[in-house]
Image (cartoon, rainbow, N blue to C red; front, side, top):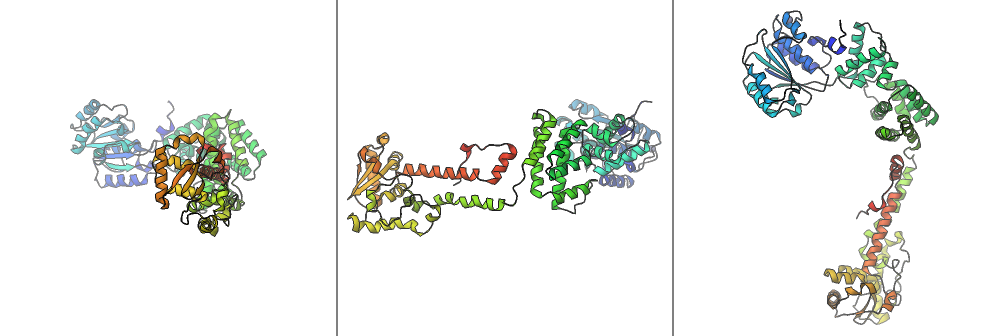
Length: 578
Ligand SMILES: [Zn+2]
């Protein structure tokens, strides 16, 4: 007799044998026993959780010769034929291979005829979401007015793809992924029945790898039995799955915690010698780190992990930031594994990276505030409008003789110290200049125009584009009576057209409430001029840019990112926030 794979041999034949899915079983059993059954059922859920198995048991319950009940006898002709997949009134269709409308028509053509042997004609359509739109329409007609002797059982891994019209006519059951202990316990049960030796940890590994699917678990178990020559040991399963034992994992994590590079490399070499799959090892590390992180936040969390005692201990040894960082590094290590020269070296580099980088210890406190303290420079420009006049001097050497009528008292900070920028003096220069003017230089008493406030006044003028260019690039040399002497660098002389000069003159006169005239100085005078708005803005922008660059470069978080991901800063991409 040929070998029957475990998944088929141990496929549940009654509701009592089904593992998990209690919420579905209860509804089905009640419906059957009270003889109140819907005509269409939809079983949805991921692969290998028992969708078609439940559908088959349901078909048996409906057609058992002993009568409709939740406990089909399993011995009558109908039950046996259904178990063997050759019952004429159970029509099983894989929609994945029959998606065309003609196929569906052909299938449904016979719906009207009474079942030939059983009580009900049962249509079991697997992967029903694969049917075409037309097929669904054909099906819909039958679903709307089903003959009393017909039951539809649909199974799908993707219920989202079903038309609402179909969904609304079905009783829907969402089958859950099986939990790890449900799978491992069932595997243990089967192995006991089969008289096969096993180690419990091996079953846990298989159950974890099966990821909620009993069918996958049984396939892996078949493989493990073949691999282990008739028994299921942890070693063979680790070998088969390329995974890592809990003990090895714990050793690795402890070595990380103790920053023990030698132990880490020894572990890595051992895993390589055992032929472990480092991608899978990363998966296990990630799962363990995630578990540790969770335990740190929710220490009394219920756990299905057999290893939780070790993980709990580790959760106390690690600090939370480190766990987060290790997780991130492991994630990247796994991603980059295929790029490494070979998996082992990729794995080792990741371990070493985990040792090299740790979240900065407490000092961060003070370091963090340091850059913040540094940011006042950026905040200084925020005070801009008034201070501009005062802050300008450093950018371009200020005109000196004109400064005579500027407040002599006005402190001209060579380098405007950030902290001093804020205090009271800020606004003083302007007013001081005002007061100083009348007496000292005998200017028109109310003409408030100095190299210091020039750029601010220019900025406030409403000018057309060309005139604005002229204004922004002109520096105030001096003011004599109503003559405003300006200088413009020779390469920008083209800006000084008669029209733009007139417009600037008009705008300035209006602004200052006096009839003024503009005199553009000879190039020789240029070096005596005050700052221009354009230069000032460029300098300000450059300064803000530099502050932004400094802030990024001095940011400890950025430093960690750089080191961890081997990143570099693209300086051109840094933009000051306004
Ligand atoms: Zn029966």
